[in-house]
Amino acid sequence: MHHRIRPVRTALVALSTAALGVGVLAAPPASAEPTPALRAAKAAAASTDSTPSTIAAEWIAGELRDGLMVGSSGPDFGLTIDTGMALSTVASQGGTVTAINNSLEPRIADYVGDGTKESYAGALGKAATFARVAKKNPTSYGGVNLITRLEERTADATTGTAPNTTPNPLVGRISDKSEFGDYANVVGQSYAARALTLANSSEAGAARDFLLKQQCASGYFRADFDKPDVPSQACAEGVAGSAADPDVTALAVINLVESGDKSPAVVGALAKAGTWLADRQRGSGAFRAAAPVSKINTNSTALGGYALGLLKNRDAALKAALWVRKNQPVDKYKCRTALTKDTGAVAYRKDRATGAKTSGIPADARDEWRRATSQAILGLQFAPASKDKLRIVSVRKQARAGERVQFRVFGLAPSESACLQVKGDFVRVKGKTSGDKIVRKLQLPTGNQRRVALVKTSDDEARTSLRVRN
Image (cartoon, rainbow, N blue to C red; front, top):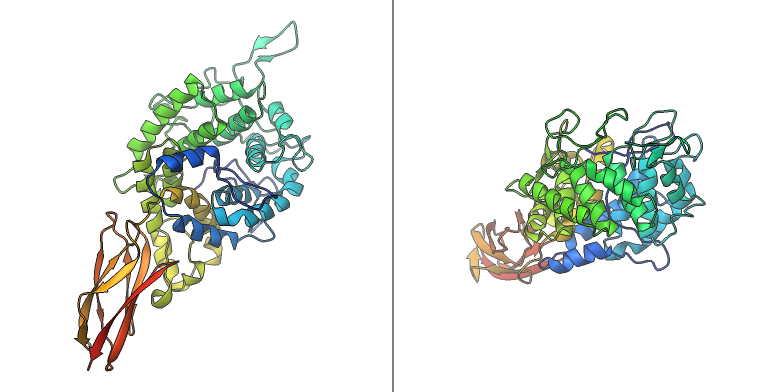
């Protein structure tokens, strides 16, 4: 389901880091602030609807405990950062982002290692990225110089000592220092390249160039590096270890865009990756994860759509957002289910939502919903707005009790969930991709009186009335 900056190294230190490439803002001021790249992308997009990302943000904010995401092994700092990055794009969540930063910064060593025996390159790159967009100093974040540590974990241009130096084929590659092994990968490399570039590090160019080596000729990025003793260190299409990975490709795009690197090599790499991602997108708007997951899901779709949105491919970003929004149940009012208390959460796959409507989100599945939602917030940034104000019209002025009467609903955003209801009857509806009206019938109750029919979304409602006679 996720590409991680890898593993749980001890029972106390959770390093699950399905990575997102956006920003986070610390106090003061307590306000979320999307990155310049996201602001520019949304300005280039058609009119967008903030509702799905807002309600997803409200749900995931409620999942935090004292500013941290806590899993079965304790605080999950990687998911905490992902959550803060996502929430930074939602205007109402500045206070939550502040709380995340205030809890994370004093404990950053638990995530990146102690800097002596343990130093985790991918986590350092991601943490430094987080610090930068949080308007904190990554050279002194929680008392740790994240940039210096990251430079230490980035291979130099030569090996040996002068005058007996030799060119290093691993130049720019990140690696972990750990008794548990080296788990550095391409996701971590993309964060390292971004963080070092934004810090004007002398090693930024090498880190970026090594990242670009992980892009195959078709435009995708692979997930893992070659073993250190392999001479080329470059993605080789059709060779074991160089399989296409849409999640990793999307994250590489996000981090390259956010790095601000406008060099010809990066511009060319982004163009190729954007073409590959757009070709990989299904007609429904969804993306399928790489093996071994190999399934369509909201994580891959949200990341792919967000990356394409940052590349100003607004049609592809819109299609992805619509698909993700379909997997955000809004079962409120008369349409309520066991998921109503989790309104805004995004299911990893449709079947997860179907099951949870009866029993709620199982305790052992809550982590999956959190991860899906943290990434969905990003893809939902490009959800299209409705063309019209929400309203409901009855085709009849009066009717008899028990009759099924047609109602027309206007102003639902594409893929937006709503509940159409009258006393004694209700139906769930979703906005059409075209934005056109929805037509449904409701059975009228008994009683000689005027009855109100309503359509209710997560944050709005409209009503009409008609005379009912027995």
